[in-house]
Amino acid sequence: MQPNISSQMLKGILQGVMLMILAKQPDYGYGISTQLNQYGLDNIPKGTIYPLLAAMEKRHYLVGKMQPSENGPDRKYYHITPDGQAARQEFVQEWQFLAQIVNKLIEEQ
Image (tube, rainbow, N blue to C red; front, side):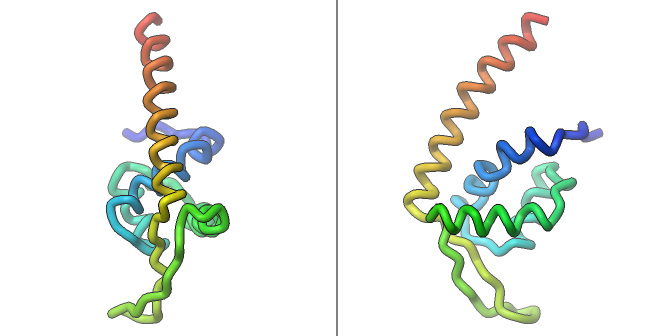
């Protein structure tokens, strides 16, 4: 059973998680949502993903490119930029540091 993750905690990590997904390969909003579901983050509203993608594009972490779709209208695929790669790496380092501290505290319980 998946725990109910607070929206505040999730907002803090969602950008990093999405950068990690897009570092593997470009994808569009719904495709990213599907991948999040596959990793167990299936309670994220679609209304959260698209504004975050727009904000990340504004920060130059992503570049969106319209591409034809076999199943309907064109889709905007997001490609990670060098700035996005740097932000992803920073997220990984921060996460590892924080996870180490939190895990140590949990072990001491």
